[in-house]
Amino acid sequence: MKIAIVREQANGERRVAATPETVKKFRALGADVAIESGAGLTASIADADYAAAGAAVADRAATVAGADILLGVQGPSPDSLAGAKPGAWIVAGLNPFGERARVDAYAAAGFEALAMEFMPRITRAQSMDILSSQSNLSGYKAVLDAAAEYGRAFPMMMTAAGTVSAAKVFVMGVGVAGLQAIATAKRLGAQVSATDVRAATREQIESLGARAIFVEKVAGIEGEGSGGYATEMSDDYKAAQAELVSGHIAKQDIVITTALIPGRPAPRLISDAQIATMKPGSVIVDLAVEQGGNVEGAVAGDVVERHGVKIVGHRNVPSRLAADTSALFARNLYNFLSAFWDKDRNAPVLDEEIGNAIRLTQDGKVVNERLLG
Ligand code: NAD
Image (cartoon, rainbow, N blue to C red; front, side):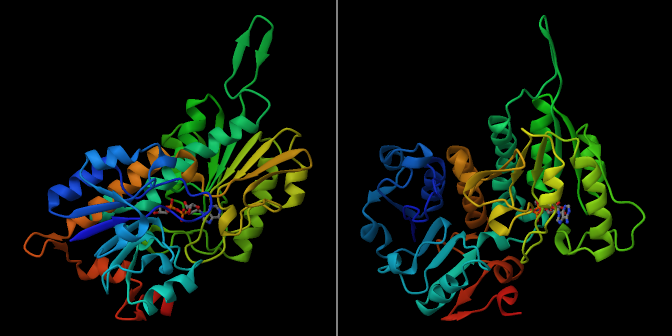
């Protein structure tokens, strides 16, 4: 059994799918591990550290040659995988809806592609959940990015020269990233409020010491769909939400938006007209910018200014904390493969529930229901 890790190819991707810690653990399971030279550099991991952990460090062709499993943060390009075993697994964040052509190419090349972001959100798979591990750090980083763009302080400070008032931070979308954004903004001393369409989040917001801002008394208010994810909301709800947000947002200094709906464009939460009501110098961070954006005028990969308000739209926020996010991503991959490791075959064997959820391609075809349906 050979596990291979090639250097990430996507522009701006600084993470790596294995660390010396996970290399050691894969070796202990009985696998050989090969890694492309330089794969860890942008996450502050030297080739020598991988070698010391028991990996063969080589060029890409030698790394891929004879591989049974290829690990990635993002999906490697199919052309770079020539020499891997027929039917080899590709285990990575494959962005199946956004990169459909690449999924088709994996099928055509005979690879079995497993999309880690399709991992079911069930208790036993929590330690394998890349969406949670990466979103958590994105929520933290979003607040730091906001603080860096904000020309004022977050905490209230009483000084001999007078008092600096606390920043008001509003978090829209209270999933994993939003909860961490609330906690981080609280730690920095901000006055924090938050909203979501899922009623269950009210208690979570309040338990972090923030104020919950919710649409009340509108039909279709329960925004929770399958797997704890949000659903698309009714038009009545959207109108009520826009009104509520308009009143609140004008008083905020920082807004962090994180709202996503699986398989659909991100919901639009803030309009240009609402931005115009905010104070100059305020900052909005749109963590959903790559999925279409929660904020009108947000630009993926840029910080833009509208009506004196900065709108931060960094791409690939987890990659901005590459050392920590790589460590967590790599553990998610190890936790997944080791949970299914069959000692006799010295290979992982998936069960039906998880296999069917994450397998995109098999035997030359696209097989995943979410892509076929
Ligand atoms: P997500 O990234 O899909 O979305 C972010 C948040 O945006 C969600 O809370 C969602 O409700 C909210 N949202 C969507 N549309 C909105 C709108 N119009 N206005 C305001 N907010 C809106 O969410 P996530 O972080 O992946 O979490 C989704 C759920 O999965 C949560 O219930 C979370 O607790 C759960 N979860 C479970 C597990 C597990 O059991 N393994 C792991 C992680 C998360």
